[in-house]
Each structure stands twice: as structure tokens, then as C-alpha cells.
Length: 590
Image (cartoon, rainbow, N blue to C red; front, side):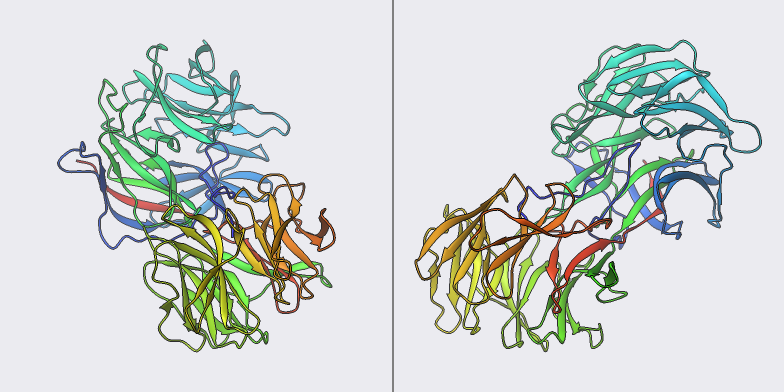
């Protein structure tokens, strides 16, 4: 498994907003809102309904809404195009343009023109043009160029960013003047409906944060908003409702017991004085664990459109002869696949539900093995093929090991003690279970072995501070990782000593797998050069390249980007097949 320092799926910000690989589905049984810190109005804003609008499967970003039409930038291969979606029939067509690669930034207040940016290869800033929604020729806005831009509500001014600098200009591109320089890149600038304030997002790549800032239209009083709010460092990309009473934005939060982030939509009650610095009065609008972002509110403030992600993970293996990735179980969205010892059966964890299933290797005879609100992970078959050990991650609780019969039945908890258990390993005779353990009583990380018959537990000497243990097939060694995924240590049961086997750069070692002959270990390397599988032998301390993944977009699951080996020895990965579609959200804004 990966540590909390694993690569996480985050909601990127314009112009590179791509909602990717996030866990969950819409869980809106009824209207939803959650007040934050008790300062919201007595009648809080809420989403009363969610309806999917598009079903085309294209990656999307930069959604702009007219009440009868939507304009959305679609990422088709390496090029961007602008699609128009008519409402309510969802008929899709491409907006005619002389540009081969462009994105939409804003829709003029009279809904007659799009503000667009043709994307220029090798340039960090793009020219700003207007593109008629109907007939007519595009027009360049003076000599302006930048990263993101929008018009004022009266259509007389333009606010835009160029790296860390915020500018204001006339609507036609004249009278450009610098307003503010931030400590980071500026995105998503928008005027308040009365034109007196501007809010924008500042991205600090070094700190991996995004913060919402506000400044007067004359450059006065620049300051960060939501400073005392728990999700302030991931807030971004907001805009006001038409009447100016609310500011709708997105912010990320981490799903319990996972390293997966999702993005939710939030509403902030606004006032002319902008009194929202302390994060009071924020209401979460979208529930469940589906990500939403890039919201655009209707002119009557009764509807909102947003891009939502439906996570799909496809388990694939690399076919050496065909030189391509092929699905292991076609039509199943899953991760964490494990083969039975005889290779005839598999278990896997469904995406996005997190439920453990068992089936034949070809996907037939499916049987659900777990249920409930928690997530299953890292299933491992017993040597006799009769039981599966797994990690259960319940919201707000420690990780626990469970055993479930392969034929189906009640899953039982392995240990009832406090602490988190993970990474189950069976002994070759199936009598013992080794696992990584995180003690809640100050004991920290260590590795322990449970005798399933006697219930006796032994700690592996010297295993303090190690996790992700892997028992060698011959039973002689344990390979384990340091918490920063830099060091592989090896324990020899004969000498009862640990040795440093491999030391790599931070985050290099993930999902280690022993070779069948117990003479080397493989690991997933996401850091050094191309994503690859590397191998280090027992008598060596430097890894060698075993397999380069090439062009595969991997799904970032609850425990990072999973990899494993199939029964035939081929490498398996989870390919990201997540869809991004536009959803219409019914709104109540008291």
C-alpha cells in the first residue's frame, strides 16, 4: 500500500481543470446542505435535485451556462474544442471556430459572445479573443494575453491574470493596468455583480495549496478569504450568483481512511463589505462522494450546472506478445485484484463502491463478499483458496483485518484490539497471518504475526517504523518499507536480522511484489523517469528496470495507484476510465 504521502487525486484549477479519478457516486437521496460553524442563515442554501445533462464521455473543463445553452470546453486527444449543449434536450454541437485548439473562458453578459483563448504551444500565456455565439468573425482583444479572464457584469471591463499578476482592462482590451501581484499563480478572477470587488484563486505549487483572495476593483484591501476555515487551502474557482447574495466555489476534502480527495461545491453568504474572512457561514451544497466543480449558476439563481465525475477503474494487464494493455475482467470497474492460488478465481474491489467481490477468472459466477458503509482493500487469498483476508476501512475508525469465506458468508474481524492493521500476508501453510500494525497507544508502526489456531501474536523484532510487509514465497524473508517509501529492508528468519536492501529517492517504492522464486522483489516506481516496474535481486542493492508502463492513464484509488501480478505473471494496473459529465443542480438560495 501507499503511505499518506502518496500521489493524491486533486481537483485542478483552470485552465487545466480536469476532474480525475475520484472515488464515489452521487448519494443524494434528498435535498442536502451542511452548515459550517453555525453562522449560516436560518434557512440555508441547498441543492434540491441533481440531473445528468450530458452522456457523451468526453473529458470536460471550463463550463459556461446560459439558461438555454451550455458551453463547455472538451479535451479531445491533445486538442481542445468548445461544445454547445442545448437545453433541455442536451443536443450537442461544436462551436465553429478558426482555431484548432482553444478553450472558453467566459460568456458575455448579453450572451452573444464567448471569451476564448486559442492555446499556443510553448507559451504560458494565450491571446484573448471574442467568438460570436451565432454568426460573425472572431475579434482579438487588443494585445491582451494571459491565463484566465472574465468580463464584469456590465460588460465594460475585463479582469485577467498573467502568471502571478492580476490586471484590469477595458472590455475591448484597452486601458490595461496592473492591479495586484500574488505569491503564486492566479486563476479564476471574477468581478462581483456590482463591480466593486474581484475574487480570484492563488495557486502555490510549492505548498500544494489554492486559496481564494479578494481585492477592491481599485486595488484596495487585498486579502485571503476563509482564513480560519478547515478547507481553505484547497478552496478555488468560485463566482457570485447573479444577485450577488452568494459566492459559489469548490473545495477539496479527503475521504475518511483513504488518500483520495474529492471536490465539493460550497456556498458562502456574501455582503457588500465582503465579511467572510473567518470562514463563517459556509454551506456545503453537494453530498456523497462524487466530485463536482466548475459551477455556473443560472440568471435566476434557481439552477446551477457543474461538471461531475463518475469514477471508473479498468483493471488491465500488459500482453507482451501483443504489446498492449488488455482488460482482465471486461466491463467491471474495480481495483485491488487478486488471483486464487490455482489461478481459477479472482477477488476484486469495485470502483467506486469499495465492495469486495469474487468471481471466476473470466468474470463469471460473481459473488458479493462484503457490504456496508466501509471500503474493502488489499484482498489476499489463503493458500488453500478457502478464505480471503482483507482490510476494512470504516469511516472514522481504524483499519481492521477481516477474514471472509471465498464461498461467501459472514466476514469476521481478525483482532478486536485497538490499532490499525493492514497488508495481510499468509504463511505458506495458511496457519499464520502477518500484517502491518499501527498501534494507537504510542507503539507506532511495526510488523506482527498472528497464529490463527492459538491466537498468539508475535512482533517481528526490529520492525519498528516499518510498514507494507511482504512475506517471501519460500517463507524465509520479509521485505518491508520505510514510511517515506524510500527504503526497502529485508528480514531473514534464519539470522533474525534486518538489512537495508535498497535505498531510493522519496516516494519511489510502492506495492512491492516478490518473485515466485523468492530471489528478487519488484516494485512500482512513480517517481524516477517514466512510470515503471523495477526489480532488485537478493544479492544486489541497486534496482534494474523490468517494465516501462508507457502511455496508460492510471486510476488513483483510495490507497494510491495500485499494481499487481496476474496468475500468468503479467503486470496488472488500473486504467482510469472515469467519465466527466455536466449535471444540472436544482438550487434553493434563501
